[in-house]
Every structure is written in C-alpha cells, then in structure tokens.
Image 1 (cartoon, one colour):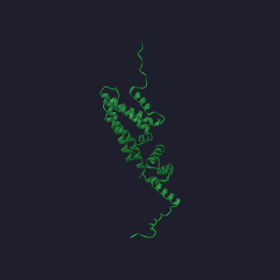
Image 2: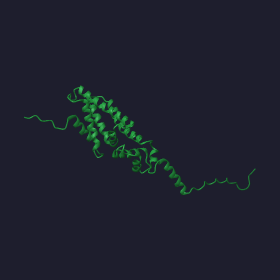
Image 3: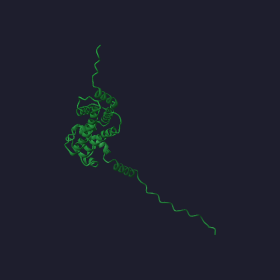
Length: 230
C-alpha cells in the first residue's frame, strides 16, 4: 500500500548546553594549575638548580627552608610537594655531580691502551663534567661529612680518588711516570688541579681548551725544557 501524506522528520537532537567563555577559562586554568604544581610553575629540576645556588652562597647548614622559599618565590609547602626535606635536595644535587663523574670512570674502565692514555681520558672527562655541572660539583667539594647524606657522597668521592691513584701507580710501575713521586700524592695534586676549576671557570671558557692546558701542565709541567748550551 502506498503511503500518503508528508514524511515525518526525525526528532532534532538536543543541543548541548552552551558553555560560557568564563567557564572554559576557569576549567583550563584549573587543568593548568594541576599540571604546573606551584604558583610559578617550578618543577623539581628547577627547584633543585636554584636551591644549589643558595647552598653554594650561604652554605648548606646556613640555608633554611625559609631561605629557599624566599628565593623561589613559593611557599615551603609547595617545595615539600616535591621533596621531603632539605637533606633530600642535597642528596639529589650530590648524586647529579657524582653520577656524572662516575660515568666517566665507568667509560674509562672499558678503554684499552696505556695508563697514561686512560689518565688523559679521565682528566678530560672530569674537566667536561666540572664545566657542565660546575655548581653541583662545587657543592660536592664543600661537603664535610656532617650528615649521612654527606658521608655517603664522600665515600663515593674517595672511590673516584682511589681509581685515579691506581692509574698513576700503574703508570709509575710501567716506567711511564716519575718514580720519585708518590702516586697517591700525585693523584691528589692532579685532582686538585681539576677541582680548582670550580673557583674560576665559567660557561664562556672552552672545556676542551681548559682540558688541553690542564693535561699539558699535569703531564709536562709549566716550564719550557732548558735548551742545551752550545
């Protein structure tokens, strides 16, 4: 049978309620605040970097959480959102310096060649880390073992010193280093040269050029060899 009359139209879908611009802005801001964590939007890496600046300026023991709060421009509770204590910040900072230095040693252990070649690699790698992570290495060199965190860091640092001493000793035993010099004293003096960079090196200095000069000074001395008189 043929249908008569006009065809019925399907019912219109209900329109979603109109959202005001103000509501959109409010929900967007809420989502942003949830992901930013902290009024200025600091993440843990930024908090750590700024905190290390304050530790180096005032000393770790002389720095309070109030000092960090003022420098960061956020509340102490906002800092505690990321870490549990000032000691945890110190541990993270020292780990960053030591992890980088230990990576150089780990690579050095895999190298073939003479102990002199490995010594040069170690010095160049140490200079590169110090220039790149200067403020973290500066903090590492200033710890005195007053807390468990500091004592753990100092133990790891001594292991680095011992590795360098072993390389100098190996070079001496193979007749490649002066036998009249105590290898342990020599190692400390060489490490002292590297560590002294924290006092003056800046990003404008070329890490490669500084490493070149340090290797020349450590291996060949400061003075030009005296020429034989005719």
